[in-house]
Image 1: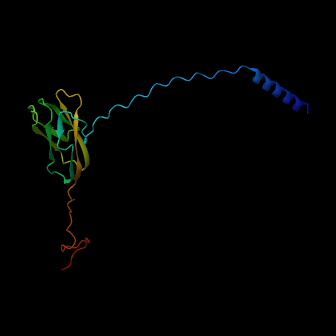
Image 2 (image 1 turned 30 degrees about the vertical axis):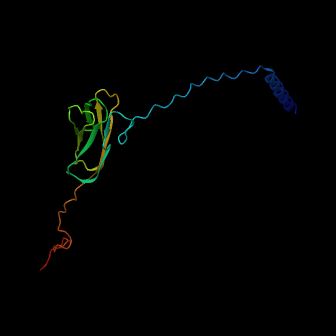
Image 3 (image 1 turned 30 degrees about the horizontal axis):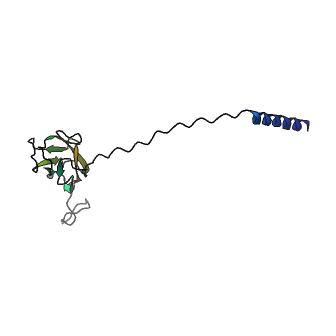
Length: 175
C-alpha cells in the first residue's frame, strides 16, 4: 500500500511541475508563396491556338486500318494567314519511320503549300506519330499528327485448305 501512495505522490509532483513550466511558443507559420498561375498550355498535335500567321487544313491524319506495305503518304495543307511571307525552317518526324517533305520557298500571304508525310507501313501494329514544324521568326513549333493501324497480311497456310479434296488427317489416301 505504501508503494501505491508513493507512486501517486511522485505522479502528482511531476504533473504539478509540468503545469508550472513555461509553455514553449508554437513555431511561427512560414508565409506561403502566392500561387503562380499555370503557364499557358502549348498546343499539342491536333489543336491550334490563336492566330500564329498560319493555318493547317487539318492537324491529325487518321489512316484507319491499312495493310502492311501500303502507301503511307498523306498531306497537310498549310496557308499563310499573315501579311508577311512565311518560311518553314524545318519539319521533323518523331521517329525515322515518319518522314516529312516540304517546300523551302517562302509561302506568300494568302497562299498555301503542302507538307507531305510518309509513314513506313512495314511496321505492323497501331501507331501515333508527330511531325514538328518550325517556322522562321516563330518561337513555338506547330505539331501535326498521323495515326492508324498497320494490319499484317494473313499467314500463308502450308497445308491444303479444308475442302480442297486432300485429306487433312495426315493418313494415306486409298483411292
